Length: 296
Image 1: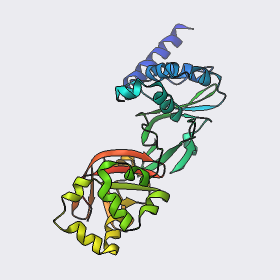
Image 2 (image 1 turned 60 degrees about the vertical axis):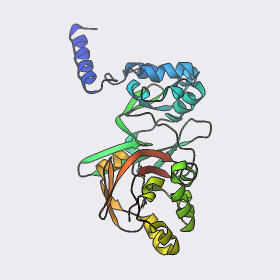
Image 3 (image 1 turned 135 degrees about the horizontal axis):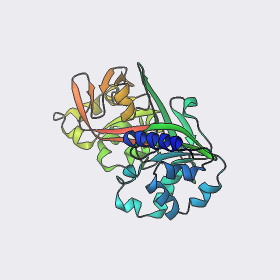
Image 4 (image 1 turned 90 degrees about the horizontal axis):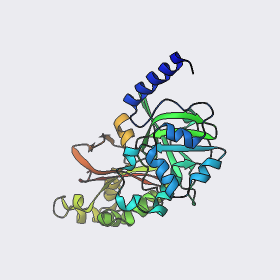
């Protein structure tokens, strides 16, 4: 390689290393997808690919998309997760799609099957406001997209998409100990089918949120089912708004038809501001953000 070409590659690498600490320049012509991951310094991903027995699968793949988290992102997983090869294998397979996907062709709320045994879907969202557009995969922001290898495509995402969604909004609420009041009230208001079938964002008040209401408030709601249904619908948005979407869009209407405002840490409904204490729990039909106050 001529000296001026070496210098050019070095300078480009340096620039991308500054702005993308876990990545380098784009995949070079002739690189297979594993080499391209290595080129992006996806050390943790490759380590888990090796330990979970997926190396040969990816090497022989003819057409694959990898949603590639950084090594730093893998470092945020609990040690009990990263030390379990079966769990890590499922996580990796959720980040591998069995066909090449060009993000420019994706539409909001598009579901595409992953390579997990049950073909769990990855939900893609496109959030736009003004000149800003953000694309997410199951809540993870796609930082850089459509890097072509000889046998697939790499999209760099800002997090590990964990845990993969295995149940509906209803199933998650029903199986979470801190949502038992919400579950009871949703059953009384006949909203359980809504949480099973629609595509929604659920701002889910935990049990402590209901305990903060004035004495007798829950009992009074149970005596007025139409009002109870409206109150619960204040917490349901007919769209999937992950944290990234809340940051970009910031406002919308709940299922009850009333405006709300939100960001990555709070949601405001009329005069009530609730803190989002846990965000971005993916379900098969949307996303849950746990909040500390009831929106009424």
